[in-house]
Length: 269
Image (cartoon, rainbow, N blue to C red):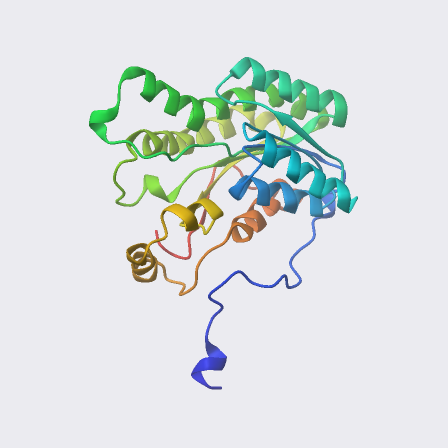
């Protein structure tokens, strides 16, 4: 075998035969921040498993476009609800609306976040509180809202999105990194609190994932060098790589797994 034939893929793989999860068929899933980036990939992958997928986002244009895209395929029921997750009352209302229209939520994906850059000297109390609200507060209140319906339905899976940023040397993200580290602690305590109800709570920690936003704003030649230097695997990571981990955690295949971090970073950490 030549060196070229042995080279690993360096771009988004063309859909080979990945796993299917029958337990997700008709199961209701709720994804925050689902209109673009990782969230949109989660919505697409869950829908492809024939889950009934609802998602919320501030970006109404992209949310409605994704809803039309999925509705046209006819593979699953989908519902888009415009919502600002910083507004806890609106988030609770959205969760209630989804449960009324699609059924009890059995999979919760707490994904919505903002990695807007700020220097330490830029912060006042209002900005700090806003960053906590968009990056960690809604995780707790969404879990609080779905827990009773998961309990009554016989269990469920809550999947929180952490970040490699809480473990590596990045600058200008003090509030974001604080929130993402807090999500790992929240995952641990919710797993303990909700475990007796058959509710599993896990945290996915993505590495540097090549979303449209990252490619447009942050993947510079210097960043490329950092990825090559720090990852064990020699190729870039894409949203589908994280989505396939999420499917396993959402499905009954991971029924014995809770309170854990699941790292998808190409071996960076």
